[in-house]
Image (cartoon, rainbow, N blue to C red):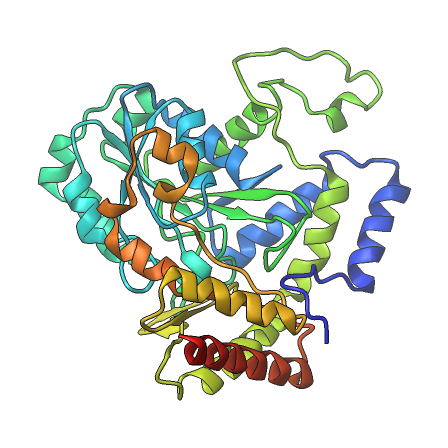
Length: 406
């Protein structure tokens, strides 16, 4: 049986929405992008939502809006995909990596120890879709001692008056931070990924959620950022295409990172079905947990803790007391049966580029501990009971094969 790791969910509603966009004669940024923004805004509870062409470009733009510069520091987890730190570097600042907790997510204690007068922002990551500890994080940046340490150097920073918290919510669209609050509105800014493997996809894309405190005007900021995402051009292509609407101006140094309608159409159809799709992801997650929580060698990933609940994006199974080499052999054994699995993530200090910048995995022991035994299992709505049973038996057999050969 061949089981892919993360195929996109494409049904007739998605195909019809895309065909509608193609037949409309308008395929770049237009009405479907705006409709998707409204759906994400409503679904997440964010004050405003701006769709862009990727998580990475959205994060870069927001850091540039904040005004980070060389020698400014942005705290990120060592255990995440490289885009989190690469966005900081592209924006011109320095990523300060800190260790994780056993739930994969960034340690708030480690954040506290890493804050200096150069710290301008913190980018926590909801690994696998399980929300970070945002109550304590927001309390931390608002502590008088931490606020007094903050050195504002731009008008935006002066208005905020403290370290910015920007949630890397790439995995967590649909997660609950508490029973009445989904991710997307729990920090100053949250950025979702809508990449091809995400729970809701636009093939490539991202969505910036704005929740800045007063005196910021999030609606006005949305308009400013929308223009910034279009090279700071005062009219978008849709407006310019109307009779007599050709004249425009360029009013700043922007970026070209807008989302196209033909991409937004995919996400628009999916997000309308997402509550049901989310139930199916939860079904798959629960099936795995029921099967593996009885195994002494398995550490099942977090899904619900207090009022927090995952988006069920990744099933990050960990194998107790395995070396990295044993984990890799187990993945090879699983692959022999046609089941595609993955690893989330190789900690950034283990990657050649970040090693060349001086980062060392020895400084992040929990990140390495999380990584060395982690195997991500397929999780998506199309997995029926027969396929799940096959995956579970395959994983258990692969473990026994590796252990017996040791």
